[in-house]
Amino acid sequence: MMTKLNLIIVLCTVMLMGCGVQERTYTPEEIVETCGFSERTREFNMRGSDSINVMPSKSTVDKHFEFMDFYIFESSHDAKKAFRNTENWFREIEEEGDDYRKGWLAGVCDADIEEYEYLTGNMIVIVQMQCVSTWGEVVAEEGSEPEQKKEPDPESLKAYEEAKKIWSMEYRNEIIDLMRETFN
Image 1: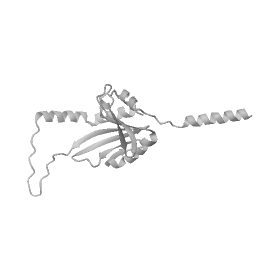
Image 2: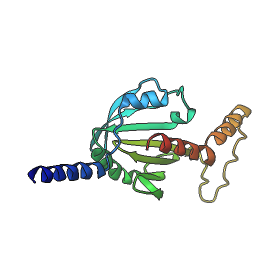
Image 3: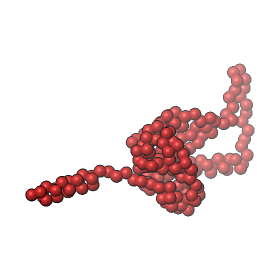
Image 4: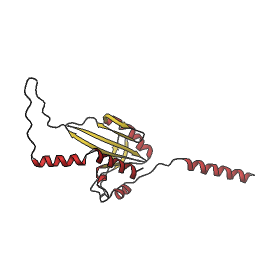
């Protein structure tokens, strides 16, 4: 009788342990290998939580990875704490869920930067989705005529058109989709 009771207790314990959701644990080496980066890391304290920042470099796997910045924490608890504490980085949050946040960064001079943060296991992935420069905007003083803007040179215009293609909404969504499919 005692053996049956012990067996039932052990089985129930194993079943309950199996039901617990185990968070994914990432390592810097895994990110470097998955993304095809040369290893570029640094220690980084994100809002009170220590992490290892795997910085993007030229990818041998997929160019979309080159726009992702990875912050790997000791535990998923530390990553969640840091994620909660980065909310005030934004002046405007457009979308938000349990594991992501997308919006415009606060405190950036001369530009508007849209950022996407993704929390998965012990890691936060950050992608700067677009940067809209506000540098050099001409503001006319009261009672005066605004300055005429100069026509951009052909090289600058070509670079601008190329950047527009890269940062199209479709391209940004491809980055997010790849990030969420690869690191889930």
